[in-house]
Length: 102
Image (cartoon, rainbow, N blue to C red):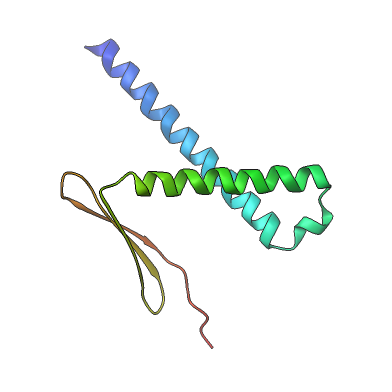
């Protein structure tokens, strides 16, 4: 039983680490491409960053579509992403994204 717990712990840790690295690479590539730094990149580096953004973005969307129901609702100051799991429990991911306040 202890060996099984260690195996599950290592699998969970590596899953968490992989998600963290994927998220960081997605953020870095997005900042580079949308932040105006793409003009300073070589052609090869630009395409690597572009592939990273689309690969990680498609992974996030694929995970959301795998759920039973998927709805995207917009509010004044944030975007709320509601995902209803197969077990009928609602999980709410709130992505705080300020909308242009003038």
